[in-house]
Image (cartoon, rainbow, N blue to C red):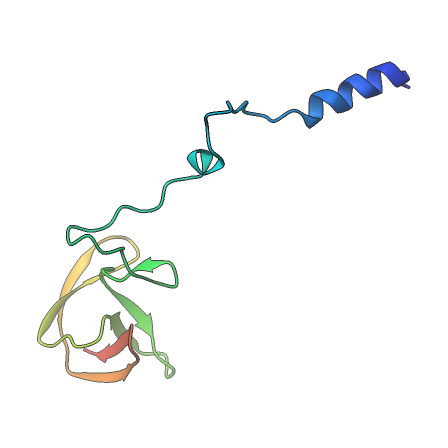
Length: 107
């Protein structure tokens, strides 16, 4: 069992900050940086942590068929990315469902 002195020294060591800060350093300087804005200067928009500029992807609909998930307002031929990273070009037939951030398309 450690002595009282050893225990006090241990506690004093544990209570020290891991990275020493100087008096001139503010707490905000040690925080991680925010994502950089895009070329227009606006912050990058995300939907559930996914960038709003994310590519179209495949998704299963309620009946078990495959649909394309992407941003609303797309028409014509779009590029769809699979989980493996390979891509395919698909023709959008109609919108199955959409909200302000995402849409499901029949192809």
